[in-house]
Length: 80
Image (tube, rainbow, N blue to C red; front, top):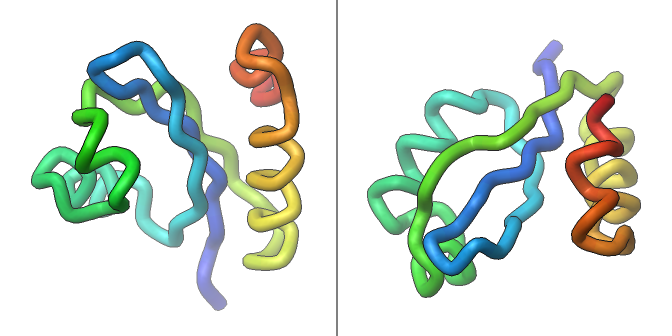
């Protein structure tokens, strides 16, 4: 059974990107190479800010949706 994570990273323009993955390290490598998502490719990858293990893919996607709906100032606090 795969483990799913929700994560948030910082882009070069200071914006945040939230996504889900089964392998955080591999996904960050792909983002750093400019291949992870169109948004991160355009904005530029800086660093992973937070990641959290979720119960399932469905749970990870629900968490991603919830984080994306939060104001910027509350996004990192969600992971606490």
